[in-house]
Image (tube, rainbow, N blue to C red; front, side, top):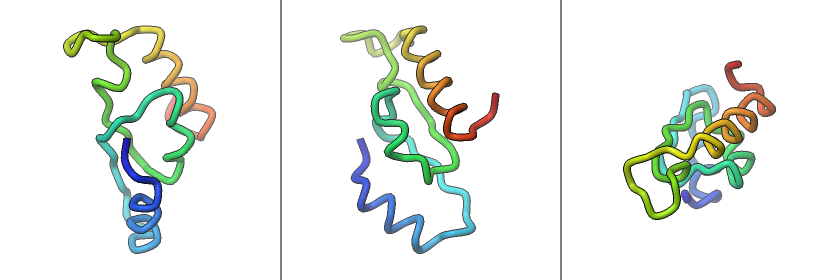
Length: 73
């Protein structure tokens, strides 16, 4: 997962610029990155010990978390 302080530095420097993050987003830490405009996800929601397949439950939970933060529905 990305260092929260580093993300804060980017957001402070670019308050009006959309920022995407592709580093360790999971349903458990999504709220930590609420200032990010776009998440690109893969391994953070994969089936445990399976690099290639998404865990549907984790994906739906992440979608729910994003909706709670005001993301697309």
